[in-house]
Image (tube, rainbow, N blue to C red; front, side, top):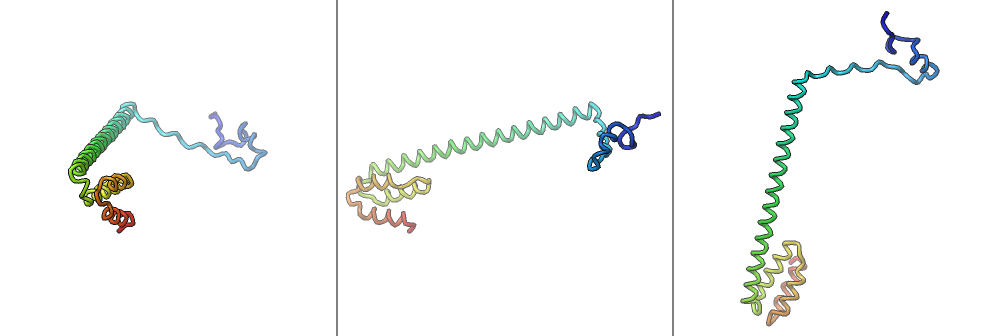
Length: 141
């Protein structure tokens, strides 16, 4: 005689316990998946690990490339700043166009031009043309 399960039973202990509660519906459990052979499971695991290692290597290479670009950008910004400073040392007292170019450059980098305005008004012999053009630049003109 084979043992009774809930799928073909009306009198087992589980079915009798659930009988007073009609909203409890006993259904057979789904069949369990067949386990993979050991070799196939190991091959799948190895393939997954190799794919994960490849993804991590790609991420690491991308991070290194981004770090190199950030370093190059900072170096270029320092170089441009040195060029502006050299030009301002040589021609800063009379060339308002150079001061305005520096203000545009700083504004393009997301920095305010207030410090450029302050330095220009003190360095220029006649700051009035610079002030007019700087205000027009700040108003979007």
